[in-house]
Image (cartoon, rainbow, N blue to C red; front, side, top):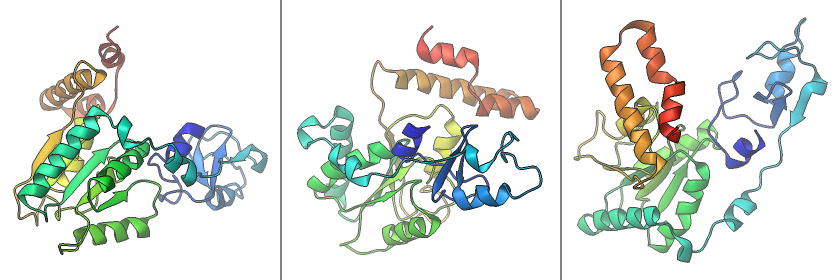
Length: 257
């Protein structure tokens, strides 16, 4: 749970449906805003809003403090750049050579990956913005507006969290999409792609997946194809369940057991 918080993964407070502030972790391992959960505990029978486990203020634990300086200090130098990052830089540089005003969105599941990308992209001369789950709604709207603003001196690359940017926003200012890792549920990736390829888009959209050969990422792609096939063949509630959840057989296939 602490690692999830330190990594800044995308999650909302289940009570206010917004990124949590002054984070509190309950004894049943759920995350809330401190203000939200304290209001809930004032009821006659205080319990966790998610699992209904009895709660009191003594069952609430403060989250570890955020350390943005630590995140920046952990970013390696360009000498340690991975092959996937080098490939991404080649694609982005080729797009810039063809048209300097071309805007691109780079999706990743991990906030730390987005942080790691900032240094090599800036070193390559790209003007970048970042959009992830650690930002509140107001800050996200500012980033989207700034990215969409036309002009030769504006940002051309948006580093976006797959979950925080996968629905409800308009990124038609971009015409290039790069997916750094595959997600087991193809619907999540399709939602992210549709942020760029949607009504209002005036350019041809190019979507690139970066997959490491002979890795678990190839098996995740196989799992995606299986789920797409299930979605087409199945009907009713069971079909939706197969599409959303990872079963035992799926895990066996991913781990090659």
